[in-house]
Length: 324
Ligand SMILES: NC(=O)c1ccc[n+]([C@@H]2O[C@H](COP(=O)([O-])OP(=O)(O)OC[C@H]3O[C@@H](n4cnc5c(N)ncnc54)[C@H](O)[C@@H]3O)[C@@H](O)[C@H]2O)c1
Image (cartoon, rainbow, N blue to C red; front, side):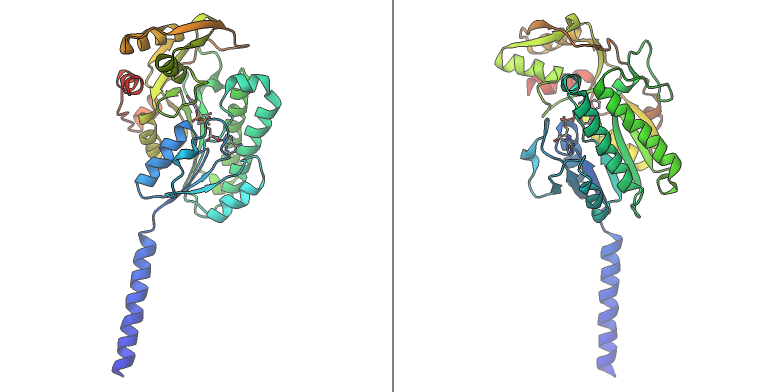
C-alpha cells in the first residue's frame, strides 16, 4: 500500500515537472536570410533572449557564415527550392521572419529574370508553409522603402506602391503576396506584418552598399562609385535600431510599418558627414545606375505610435560605425 502511494507521488511529480517544462518552453522563431547583414544581428538578438532560433540561408551574397556557432539551427537551402516548405512545417515555429532576398540593385538590373524568379518563389514558399502552421503567432515579411518608387513626399504605408527596378519589383510582389494570403486564408488572418526599412548601415554590411563602401574607402583608400553625381537622396538608420523594432512588431504590430528616423541625405552630403566624423578624404568616381529613383522618404508615425523608441540617433550610429 505504502509502495503504491510512493509510486503515485513519483508519477505525480514527474508529470508536474514535465508540465512546467512545457509551459516554460522558449518561443521558436524561424528567420530566412538570418545570416545576412541585417538579420545576422536579429538572429543573435533572439539567441541572446534565449529563444529557439532556426535560420534558412543559402550562404549567398551578403551572408556572414562566421556567426554560425551552434547556438541556432541552420539549414543551408535556397528559399526557391520547394523543399523549404517541408522544413518550415517540420520546424513548426511560433514566429517567422522572411528576410532572405537578392538585395543588390545593380545585380537585379543585370539579372532581372533571376532576381524576380528567386525572390518571388522564395516568398511564395514561406507563405505556403505559414498558412499551414498550426502554432503560428506572427509572420513578418521584410520589405523596403524602394517599393514606393520615386517619393516627392514622405510616403505613408497606405499609399500606392510603384516599384521602378527589378529588385524593388520583386520586393513589392512579396508585399502583394502578403496581402492576398492574409486576406484569403483564415489561418493567417491578423497574423502578418511587413517592414519597410530605409537604408540600414552598420557592422557586417556588404561593400556593394554605400555606407560600407565609404568605410572601406576610409580604411583602405580607393575610390567609390558615385551614381548620378551623388544627388540620390536616401534615409539612413543604424543597425542597432532594428532588433528592437522587430521585437515590437512581433509582439503587437499588424500590417505595414515604415522603419526610418527621417535622417535623409544625398550621397554627396553623406560623404561630407563621413569625412567630418573621420577627418579623412573620400575619393569618388562618376557612375550611372539605370532607372535610379532619386528620392526615397517615408513617414514613420505608424511604428512610433506602436511605441518604437530607437536607441541610436543617426549621428551616434555613424560615429560608432565609422570609428570602430
Ligand atoms: N540593407 C538595407 O539597407 C535594406 C533596406 C531595406 C530593406 N532591406 C531588406 O532587408 C533584408 C535583409 O537585407 P540585407 O541588406 O541584410 O541583405 P544581405 O544581402 O546582407 O543578406 C541577405 C541574406 O539572405 C540570404 N539569401 C539570399 N537569397 C537567398 C535564397 N534564395 N535562399 C536562402 N538564403 C538567401 C543570403 O545568403 C544572405 O545571408 C532583405 O529582405 C532586404 O530586401 C534591406
